[in-house]
Length: 279
Image 1: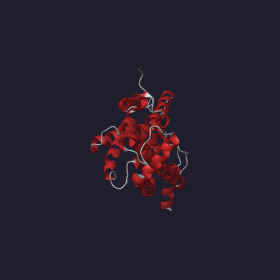
Image 2 (image 1 turned 180 degrees about the vertical axis):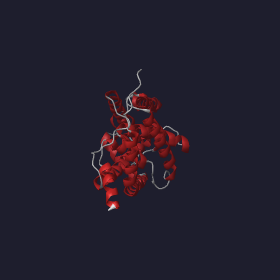
Image 3 (image 1 turned 120 degrees about the horizontal axis):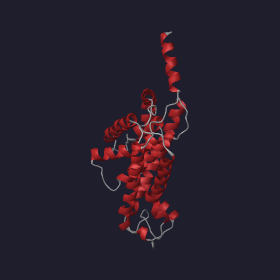
Image 4 (image 1 turned 30 degrees about the horizontal axis):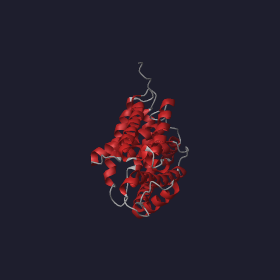
């Protein structure tokens, strides 16, 4: 009897809504939308820029990276200093960023085994899309500093991981096994999409010469997509599959307890309950 009595409050607690740790204001949503559009341009510009355009020259690639980094930092600053964030949310962001930085070396660089998506997806799911987007940026940045992975690819990783956390927080609000199944399906899809985008960010510059998998600036978008498909199959398909399977298995094993723990912490924190300080 006591066991059943203990289980009932937990089940009722599991279906109780959790307030977002960082509420996205209208201005923040506009900045996120601009970041998403800029991400498409940053990743896929070779598909729709003609070879005669000045944007097709490699000299402007660093400028494009600076623009992406600047916009990402603007979104992060907006969330951290915004009126909808409190000290508890900032402290939680620091803790989860450290978690992302700590778990990434456990899987990165080993046959596509990637552990970094688990805390980002779970955090975005529990603490909301705003928190997930910021965590994707700060977590990948902190992990790059920890592992020495700072380079021209880092802004792409930060923005792509931020969008993963954002989309995780926007998934339908279901619970139980349906929620875990939905997160597993979501993680499998975004693991491949993340890998495709990251590959495409360097593919036009890394594969030289005249080959069936090289980028051809004079070819159309469809022809280059076909070339990229075969490039990805030959070089990165195994890594993408490993990333997807790793995240799915981790969600299956650790997803339910992590969701319960983080939701309990979110309820105790009562995000947004403290009034903001007057300016």
